[in-house]
Image 1 (cartoon, rainbow, N blue to C red):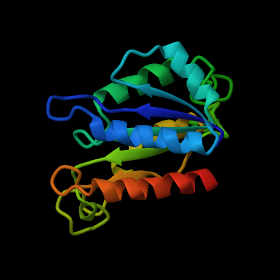
Image 2: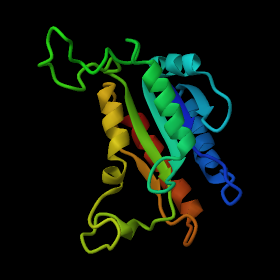
Image 3: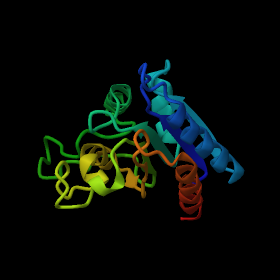
Amino acid sequence: MRKILLVNGHQPFPSSPGRLNATFTERARQAFLAGRAEVESVAVADAWDVETQIGLQLWADFVLYQFPLNSMGPPWSLKRYLDEVFTAGMDGRLARGDGRTRSDPSRPYGSGGRMQGRSYALSLTMNAPRGAFDDPDAPLFKGRSVDDLLALLHINFAFFGLAQRPGFVAHDVAKNSRIAADLERFDAYLADLMTD
């Protein structure tokens, strides 16, 4: 990973201005720069340009999406970013349609991605405790994992040919926060990503 794009997907709210996700994003930036990578970044709540972001998606060999879990999914401004950037890139830059053609509709749906050889990871902050996931007896998620919860994002990235790398989660950040320990784990996670 020599060219890295950091996408801070936090959407500020009065109760959540975004300091934690900004801290994780900056920590990732510093770690990747120390590892001699080239790093670009965008905060989706700020102004950004679709064409510039398509260019950055094509430039990067790895993209780290840092965001909080909002209403069991990505914040609306991150969803807007993904919708606008990846939909515009369907013109052949990020994908050649869905892979099928009128002359050959038998080709697999989702085989038109042009971003093979690139990868992404999701780094999340959430109030849900770790024990709420992967436990069939848990009342809300009923055994589902964090990746199960975010399956639509993973499927979207796979549609464009991106490979999934292991993600990171800081759990229980509001009710039982352990931010110092989370940041230590994040540093180890970033080190693993860079040596992978």
